[in-house]
Image (cartoon, rainbow, N blue to C red; front, top):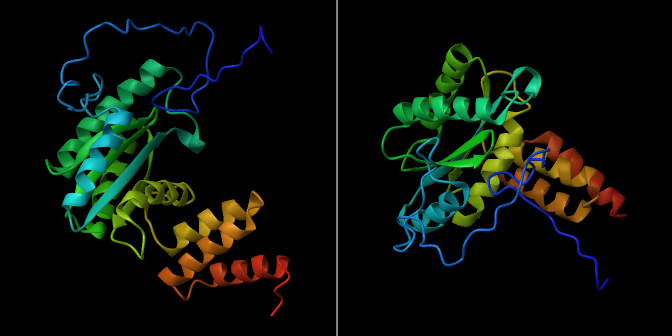
Amino acid sequence: QNDLAFAAVLHLADAAWPIEAGDRLTLLDEHAPPPEGAADGAGQRDMLTGLYGYRDFLAFVAGERGRFERFAVVLARLTGQGGRSVAASRKQADALLRKFAAMAAKALGETATGGRYSLDSLAWFVPDRDPEELRAAFAELAGAARERLEVELAVGIAPWPFLAFSRADALDNARKALDHALLLSAPQVALFDSVSLNIAADRLFTQGDTYAAIEEYKLSLLADEDNTLSRNSLAVCLARLGRLE
């Protein structure tokens, strides 16, 4: 209407973060000088962890992924017992992430580049590294995080190349691998594979998107033709569409 408007407010680091009492918006001065490094296109580092901020990490990955014949995108989420939030306050969560980022930097070496992915998650771009080596490294990190930080760690690793996925699909595949990891017992570390695609397809099916689920189940079977769960689920989808043969 002429005198009414609606707005959505999203946290830049995590769109799922709820607005709380006391939060406020600040209108930045459009004539203020840009942050140091912004003029030459350099990404801004997160002051807390020393890693790239969310948007700058995505920009970094977009610029770097074409330079390598193989790489992996990794998403790691810190959780408390039973999958609860890692801390009661934002400040506590930030402190845990800072400590974990330092632990991961030592374990992954200088070739890995990290970024802030959300309020309780970090991401890395790791070129020219064997996926099984990464799985082992993050399994050790999960144990260290449990002992030293008293938090649980869930990790999704998406190596590229994989099937016919493009380089740009790696981050989305890492999200699917993280969903897969959250269903595992400790250590919750998952490499993107046929099971990850199966889980993603199941989610699409429960949301009523049968056609998208069919495509994911087919990809799951391309990755592993012996995945009986995907084969049965694909049959259910086809039957729902009337293709009983």
